[in-house]
Picture 1 (tube, helix red, strand yellow):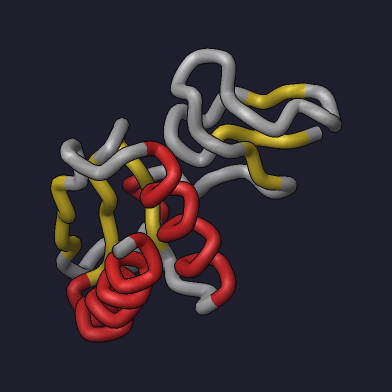
Picture 2 (picture 1 turned 180 degrees about the vertical axis):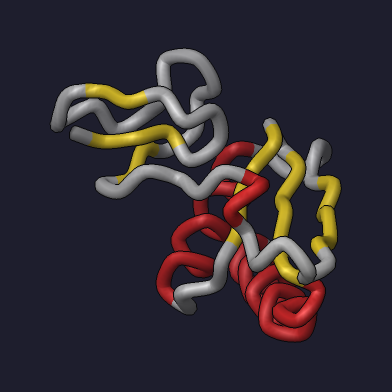
Length: 99
């Protein structure tokens, strides 16, 4: 089974793109926003509405590789405030690769 990281829909293996969102699928389910951090940790939102699917796909892959807790609300990325520096590095890396 594969999942859309952005909307959370699940699909049979072999589906490489979400039929709803158009973004890549991954082999593990996405985190829910309320699961990012603990109840007493602050969260930070990155508004990535102007990023194309390909760039968000690359950022999702980079965040998973770095094992950073994160969730998506559509094209809005939710992370722990404590991870801001690491997420900023990932965002910059993806931005540089896309240039």
